[in-house]
Amino acid sequence: MSWIPFKIGQPKKQIVSKTVERDFEREYDKLQKLEDQTKKLHKDMKKSTEADLAMSKAAVKISADLLSNPLCDQDQAFVDSMTALDTAMRRMDSFNQEKVNQIQKTVIDPLKKYSGVFPSLNMAVKRREQALQDYKRLQSKAEKYEEKDKTGPVMVKLHQAREELRPVRDDFEVKNKQLLDEMPKFYHSRIDYFQPSFEALIRAQIGREKQGHYPLKYRGFWGFVGVV
Image (tube, rainbow, N blue to C red; front, side):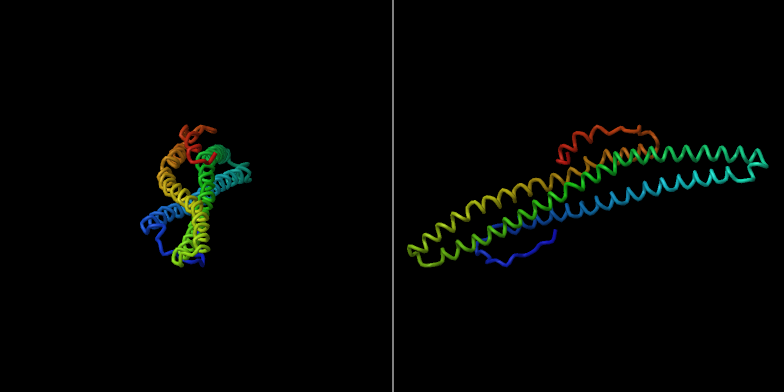
C-alpha cells in the first residue's frame, strides 16, 4: 500500500514516537515483501505444473504417432519397442496428472488461501493510517484552543475539542497496538504454514503422496491464520 500524506495541521505534541512508527513501517514492509513473494511462488508453481503436464501429454502423442507409423507393419521388433514406449509414456502421464492434482491441493491452493489474507491486512493498515490522521487533526485543533486566551467561549470550544479527540485517540491506539502485535506473529507463522506444503511437494515428486491426502498440520493452521 502506498502512503498518501494528508494535508492537515500537524500537532506540536508528538502523538506517536519515531520508534513506534519505525517499528510499524519495518513490520509492514516485511509483510509487503512476503505478499509479493507468495504471489510469485503461486504463479510459478502453476506454470510448473502446466509445463509438466504439457510435457507428458506431448510424450504420449509422440509415442502414439510412432506406434501408428507404417513401419510398425513391417517390423515386429519395432512394434514391440513402440508398444513398450507408449505404455511407459501413458504411465508417466498418469503419474504426472496424479502428482499435479496433489500439488494443486497441498501447495497451490494453500498459497492462494495465504495470499487471500493480505487484502484484509492492507485494509487494516489503511484504517490505522486514517485513524492516525484524524488523531493528528483533532490534536492540532485542541492545541490551537489551548494557546488562545482562556475566555468563556474558548474554554467551551476547548472542552468540545478534547471530547471529540478522546474517542479518536483511543481508536487509533487500539488499531495501532493490534497491528503491532499481530504483524510480527503473522510474519513468523509463515514457516509453520508453508513447511507442510513443501514437504507434500517433495512427497509428490517422489510418488509417495497418496491422492487426496492432506498433511494434518494444514487443518489446524488454516484456522490459526484466519483463512477458513
